[in-house]
Length: 394
View 1 (tube, one colour):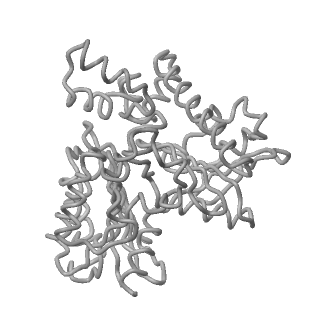
View 2 (view 1 turned 135 degrees about the vertical axis):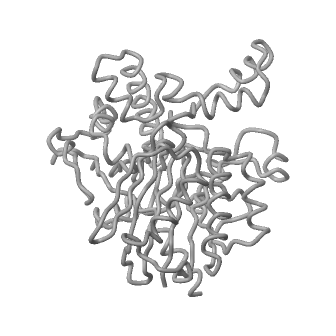
């Protein structure tokens, strides 16, 4: 069965066409920096590749571009959309409605839309992807894989907020957790590599960033909560912030609630600190001596280190930390900032190992480091394809 995986992030679209259950990748690619002046578009097969720089203003245009490349008369990999048996969609927020992979119906789409209030940078993009895919790949089954599913094992003392009980029982206000397909995939790879069920912290760093404390393969705590807005400093999202700041902005500074929401989600984080949302730009500017960019990188790393400390306490120990996703896999500078002055936790890395770029699992910790430091390329597309295939087979 040919399964097309569509992974729409807040500023990117990753896609992959696979044959299941053989796990053969027919093609893959990515469109990133969506909404900026110039977007990167890539398309790769085993024998060919295509790379373009062009403006992609939104996810709808991006997904149409993906379809055009799949059907390209010279470099395309399918002659008809009917060849694709299923389209698997990554969906960030499933709320309390979805704890498993689900075939998409109108009712499912309504729930995803309803949950857009909790994931305004993501769920609307997922809905665009679903609607476009339904039009283009009309013969295929459309399937949703939810980021929140992996975090269903978080215990009540970790997922419940200290607010009136009815807000949980009646309104389902709680920690849900996100980036679940990524955290699940890399944690399973880490356990295989370490050859034991371990106490590990997975660190997913991209435009969106999150960390998960994982014990014996199960998520027990996570930096994001009711929505994918809190926790670490992100590309445009503030992460953790004192809620009093929100009331101060509304009551004393004259902002509307919608204004504050927009500021915290779309104008804050690294963008608010530096004027740039892409870490590659920020690192480049910091190397030139830009003080705002230097400080933003230090703040980012400091927030990650704080969570490593708290999760080591929650796990009552620490066997390994894992860096993954676009920044985690590719930025040796961020990894070094995070792992500096962490010897109390047994975290020590080798600079030479840290500089290596590879698509393979690699250890960058010193041989005598008590805590292993791993870089594991995430493969959310494979994880989604596997879950879609298992659902349709069953």
